[in-house]
View 1 (cartoon, helix red, strand yellow):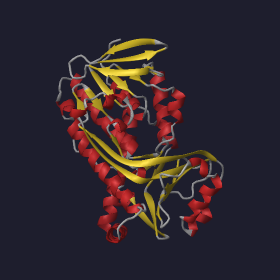
View 2: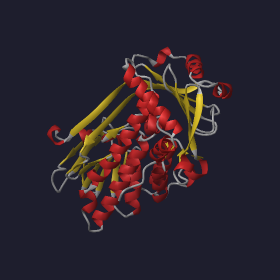
View 3: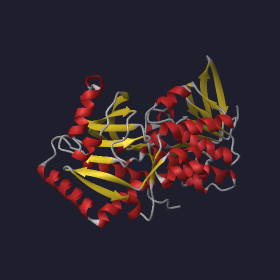
View 4: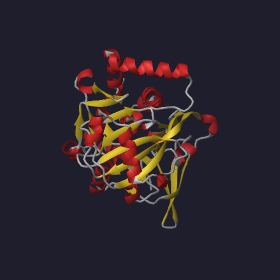
Length: 391
């Protein structure tokens, strides 16, 4: 097989990139090592910046998102039992975010790709990427016991943190930056009415909590827990009781409990790989960076990567290599700003073990400044809704 672009990974970043390229008449194939059901079964983010919303529209996949997604003008910060509303729209000239589950976004992209007759190869095993330091890269994989080879012009590594693409880069050619946090998020998904019309970020002496949602009838809640905790030790009732203890009276009275659809513990880390281009191999999304979920940046940052990469590849086939030559530089400027914001939000809202008294008081003062200063609230709001592109 010969294609112009081989995309590794059928998560949102790979699917959005494939859709953008297809609309521009660029031939691309997507390889995914899991089944479609497995991809759809992954519980992920649900808050979309304008960047992601606009990309879905550009890709022609935004109809159901606009019909079912929930637009939010603000978020609530619950600190020491008191609510502080951050007016996202009012502080950013009308910008909003949308709650629309990543599972639903992925489903829309998969269905559109199938309807258009575009090629996605699921259950592709033993994927290998080679020759990306030459003009003739290629990808090989095993399917149904047979090895296949795809010749291509470019390889897009959208295959996640544990994928083959970044692992195929010589260690001497890549710099890795990482910050591992000493706690995780215990998440619970339930078919219950959300506790509030907007997300509540709670900083409590017992640890952080987040009240989020996927729809008007499906809620997603998180608790900060030590990394030593095990999911099986948390019954639904224990989770609900602990969540209630970290909320204010208003939220406790509005909290509707019910059986969990899913429970899991996710560790928190910040991670960046530099650069994001190696010859004719490009990294995008979790293959290149991980952010703590506190700032709702993971999916949105992946979307901004593939926006930049998709436009660069379209420019290349239009006769200009400037976009692909500057892809890594442009993407990393945005990546590091999102990393900074997510790291900052995580530090402000979580309880860290063994924090020295000075740092503890300094962080408390910084949070007080953010909550009671117009400039501080504006900084939070601008970053939360998504910084504008600089191109």
